[in-house]
Amino acid sequence: MTNIVLAIVMLAALALVAGAFVLWRRTGEAKNPALMVLLAVIAVVNVLIWTVPNAAGDVPLRQVEKAAGEG
Image 1 (spheres, one colour):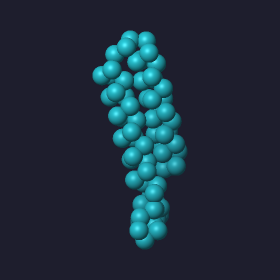
Image 2 (tube, one colour):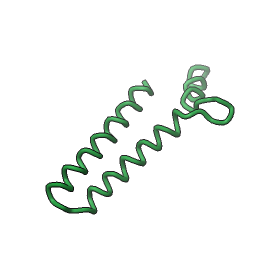
Image 3 (tube, rainbow, N blue to C red):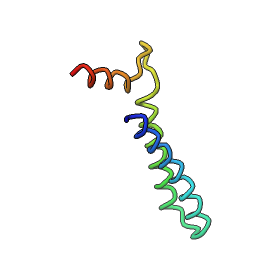
């Protein structure tokens, strides 16, 4: 289930970047598209936090899934 959530977050980040580009091209406005890109960057960083292994080689997402399975 968590893999589906992470995939949806990544798709949303791509949609935000595409939407920001379209909004910027249509209106010439910079503030809202910049905020959309910032939100996309934050979403991608959150996915990376959960999926990149730490120094011990453990992925935080797997640790949470193990703990949920044991409880």
